[in-house]
Image (cartoon, rainbow, N blue to C red; front, side, top):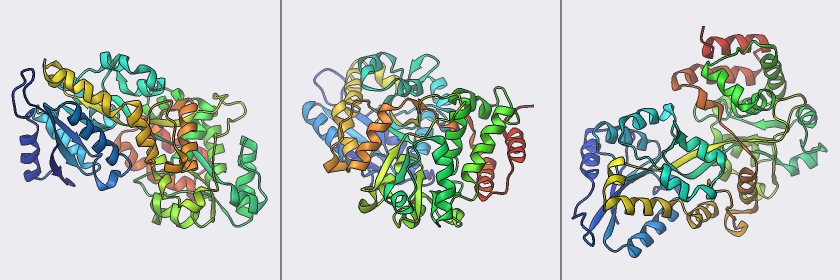
Length: 434
């Protein structure tokens, strides 16, 4: 296993030259039996991805052992620096043989990569592992009828509650919509913060509760269309009702210093100390809940809303990491079979189980988490996520430019400074095309 570590925070000239050199397709003959080098661009083998790091390292080591003529040339990046690396690779038509990346949506330039013809079509390969992943995962991985990536990890937004806080307050767990609404008032009256939330613009958690209310009342498809500007208005009566219900649930029910704390900070200050009762956030932040508190945490289906479009609980979730390949590598008679074999190894049931046991939400359906390794709380999150149908994150319908004005508006909603009417008008001005 060869490594080229790219600690990119900006796309420096040195890094550009280094990556371009590393993505030539490798050295050695591609004839059968001769040495073959497969480039793998990843941000999964870094200190910031400790959950997947040991899995990737183990799989690659075993793959090279099982295929002694193959060398995996690693091109490593830290976190979101991978976006710049991949963008450069496509621009220079030097796409790595295999790489992990975010889901195929315009916010990550994936529409451009698909249109370039440089991204490999994995439709045929996906059929071989179709049963291992849920249908919502394949829907995310598929664009224009073709599948472009194999699922690796998920993000999900579970409703989690500290049952010890509820018990101490003498308040029942929010298993229904009416209980959730009354619980918020009862908790606040007892000096307990109902929701631990940050209103910082990035990373975001202040839109998660909002998404659930819109999805439950309107349905995920209609809610997405509103943000995409494909029909309807936020001022329509059914949408305004959803906005009103959301404001009743959220306004003034987060920490007073929500704008000063990020996701990890708000968990440390309010969840780990028992000062807040509930969290509705990206599952990637759940490891910030300390072990003692985690023993008291329960995962609850976000309640359905009487009269709403969703009559059974869905969980907001989506693929966050997929494995991709270059079209040139897949077409190469020698590299193609090796690339497909490597993709399957990295996303196999065994790898998915290892990922989950390291506290990262795996995308596969039938992952059996070992509570002794990942903890019972995370095991429950993994199981609940796999069992509930998926709603797409409504952020998929927003452009990066729109989010620059959307998240400050969400902060206003949490502060209690908006009415349903003013909220609807501002959302219309952002997302509804005239």
